[in-house]
Length: 184
Image (cartoon, rainbow, N blue to C red):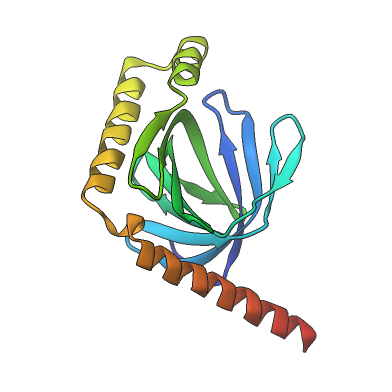
């Protein structure tokens, strides 16, 4: 993770197993760089779907991309609390100012109440069949989901509301500094 600095801007590209781009985000700003992961933030960023439609995110998000874990975590800071949307996915790579990963359908949605739900099981089974996921890949994906749930239950730092609010404020500071420097 050399040559990456806090405040750097990246795009995000999410692929499917067949190599096709599934979704892309216009912006992710580096908020923190750790040994095992990088923390990014964005707000009102454009998201382009594979079929060409697009939308903008409605709330600030703090995103954790891991070097060698099979998931990523997005904390969405909404008015009624922090929601977590966790994708079961390959560890990220960075190429040409773009964060890239392969999404494997299964998602973990965590609500401000603390309850959680595993999403998209049927989509996973469908893609597993039509894209021929190997038994080894299936095992890695399910182990990633189990590890993610364990981290959540253990209240790891990425699920700490205070930490996510801190990162959100750091994001807004960086954006304010960027806006001010554009006026100079």
